[in-house]
Image (cartoon, rainbow, N blue to C red; front, side):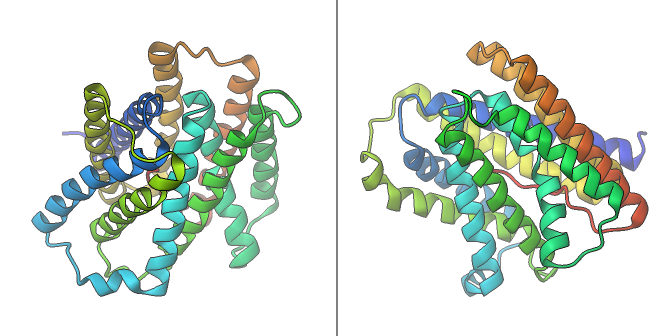
Length: 297
């Protein structure tokens, strides 16, 4: 029998695969329907799946709990992270978007230090600086490849950081499944609200319905696996396996979209991953709360 940490690592690898499958199917859908419509339809499917799962595990709670300030802040930032990421994903290579998003642990560490005064030693400050240099190499400000969609994915990282910092300070008695269900419903509702302002309803071809159904299954499966990973194993051991998402994204981008990453993108990605992994390692040996529990967009 494999150890708990090995099982947790396998769950994390499966989770990251689910997230990349979701991103791939969403990107394919953006060729036919706007981001708001994707949010509305995928959100509905994901909400139904999570509702059943939450009911099965007795994780449903009174709806008024979703109106508490911390829950509203977390939900709002998660919705914005989803909107900005899907918008960016439709206009840039999937590997580039995933690579930039790997800066999330660095941004959370920076925000925790500046806002909540959590201790950060010189080694982690150095890793943060190097990691952000890696992000700059990927997005390349001042070149033709840097545009509003590059800023959108950076915005998604910022919203996700606020989301995760808020999550860390929420009452642990609130089930994770209830939080995710609340977010899925909110994403769908916001999608419907924004739809009239993004060109209105567009006919959904049968293949796109299949893409969105598959995306909902993939994102729900990814969420379930990441929860299992963090519960079964030591978070400090498991967290670095989240960077497998970048390898998956590189392969899917090449196979599905024919995107061949540039040397700069690969070099910048390696810097971001190395910096993030070192930051997680330093947090583990110092006993600082882990910051790598990033959730889906």
